Every structure is written in C-alpha cells, then in structure tokens.
Image 1 (cartoon, rainbow, N blue to C red):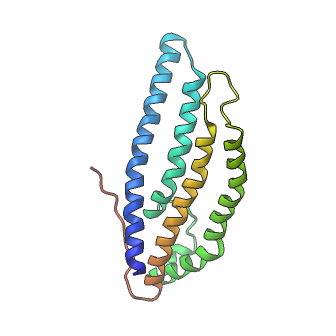
Image 2: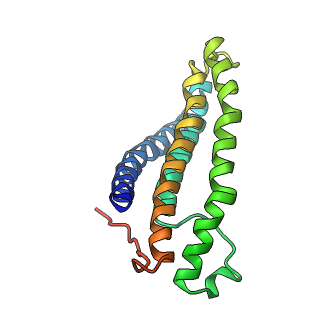
Image 3: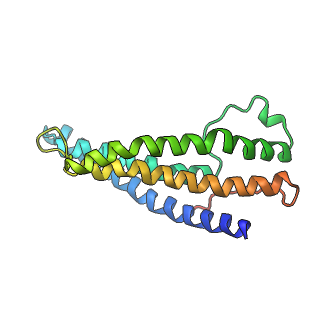
Length: 177
C-alpha cells in the first residue's frame, strides 16, 4: 500500500515536471522577447522584467519535487557515496525525519503569514507598469514546498523499503521525448 502511494506520487511529480518545462519555455521566450526589444528597439518594460523573475521563481519552486524524484539535488557525498545502498537508504530515511520534513514544514509555516498578508492587501508590483497580483507568485512558495514535501514522502517510503532489504535501490532515468 505504501509502495503504491510512492508510485502515485512519483507519477504526479513527473506530470508536474512536464508542466514546469513549459513554464520554463515561457520564461525563455519572455527573456528572448525582452532582449530583442531592449537591444533591437531600445525599449524596455518593467512588466517583462518582472515576468521573467516570476516565471523563474515559479519554475524553480515547482521543479523542486521533480528534481528530488531524480535525485538531482546538490549534495556533498564525501562519506555517503562510499556507503552501501542499504546504509544510504537508512541514512536518507533517518535524516528525512530529522532534517528534511521539519525544514520543509518550517518554511511552509513561516511563509503562511507572509502570503496571507499579501492576499489581504491585494499586493501587486511596487513599480509602475509591473506585474499585478504578486500574491499569486507568493502562493507558489507553499505549492512548491508542498510538492517537495510530497516527494519527500515518496522518497522516504522507497528508502524504507531499501533499508529493510525488501527492494533494491531504484535508479531513475529521465526519458527525453
């Protein structure tokens, strides 16, 4: 039952990753258009520049869980890389409860008033011509960390199965379409 939950979370994160790739493509197109306007026509737009930042922030936050799915987060593996797969899985399992889950929940907890206040004042850009509804961008902090938490649940389940010796470690390879 837990393993099926992990499979469903992984499949969901895969879909989120695909959607995020389109957001990233949108960001690249906005940057390209902004650069063409700036250097080709000596025109610039606060809205375009802020949109670049907003799309980057959204893609970064949404991709955190997807990145964890493929174990692509940066880490220093001086000792960890020398351990057996079972010992690494056990360490991942224990450290998830000691550090990962408390950290993610702390960010979500402390971000909530920040986001709530943004909604209450209908926060927009402080610059004239900037992107309105900045509270929408800020809500992605909770969404991104919720996705990261969800993937942490999946990884913890998988690490538990490996640590117990019930499964071999899964090596995930991204499919390019």
